[in-house]
Length: 347
Image (cartoon, rainbow, N blue to C red):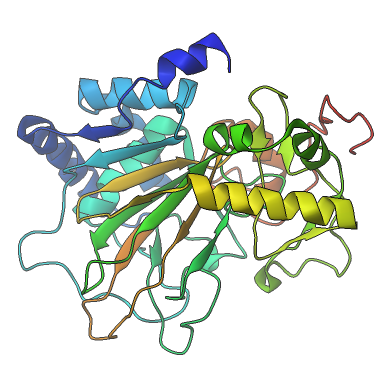
């Protein structure tokens, strides 16, 4: 690992806002909530969020800046004691597929402010109807679904792993946890995974011997997946892109390497039990996330997370945003077309 990584690794991955910082963030979120037309996806509201994000409490703002520079060994940041709904005022947990948060609430405003301090909050038109703040809730009849609507074990994955413009960061804020308080977010950092892999396996994972399928909702043409590496970039400090539900190895040796990678993930992930007011920020370039199984009751008090996606380089997706807004209209070729330095033939 590089020296800056070693420095970053000693930084606490948890930041607990004190009461004064929470009050300051709450006031800022209330100010943003009052911005007409009180709709999260409206360009005027997003512009206000972008402007007000520079006024976050100084310690929070500094920690977010540090996180964008280097996410540390765990490639995640857990923020605690964020604004919540007033006591007794938390709405019933949604229980329909595709649920999103369109109307502003104070917690959603705080989430947006933090996302805009990291970069630009974005969405994909084929996912959750392009909403910028999305609900992660169990849905009746979808218990075994490998996605945000399921309640079975959610396999470890990079968010939108198939997409060349996948999020740089994923934010998952807890509105309420499950009844039994057993549902845990799982996060596995490439910086903990790679040291568990033999060098020959790492080399194979850098080679274009894998494909990643898109969800059906993105309506990608059959066979459109191009061979790619799972590890990319620096040999010493690589990025990781994989979804163990949709990644296919193209030969037996690659399949063996993929299996060893999954075993290394199983030995290196950590679990976070999120409480209301917690926000987990995951570096989607370097960390996988998933969840253990839990039992929903569909009684209005089930587990409820709100999710955002963040891009650091907003300009990179401009061709996919014809109106210049926040929503990517379709999967697009990588405009940078940058090959992996370990394999010049990758693309």
